Image (cartoon, rainbow, N blue to C red; front, side, top):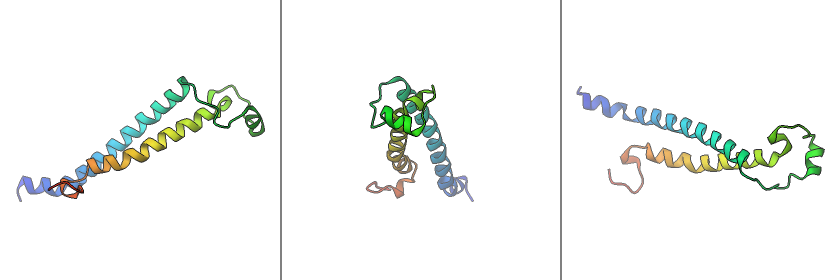
Length: 104
């Protein structure tokens, strides 16, 4: 069997591994980015009033404990962007024949 045939058979596995590496890298970078952004930018209260924080027992000095809207904003940003990024990366790492609307 020629080297080209071996490469053709290994292509889906290589693309899957590439997709996993890309998703892992993007998720780590995105998580660190959302933490940085929500710690440095002003985030509106988003309903986490002082009364709500007191009722929930958030009385510590940590940033996300004293301002829980920052953690909420980080989660919304992270999962929102990952939800958009995953299908785009899956499409980018799919074999050309599997791309909808693209000639093989």
